Image (cartoon, rainbow, N blue to C red; front, side):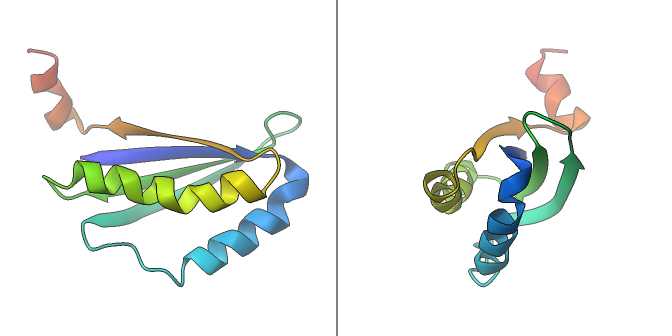
Length: 102
């Protein structure tokens, strides 16, 4: 299973977000959660900058894996004005097809 986190922030907060991200790299992720990709899209106007982070989650660790990014994002959310994020489960086609009952 995978989680996709989408975060957005105003262009003028880029330096703060990059500094916070660099600091977060010193705190390794738990072994059941792997950061597969961090992708960035630059925009004009709202919302500004959008990041997509894809995490791969070990089977049976979904609850813990959902809590960990939430814990990490709290410092961004409470300290960087205009920072927003959401986390959602995403599936490979092989995982999704049975869930659709097909």
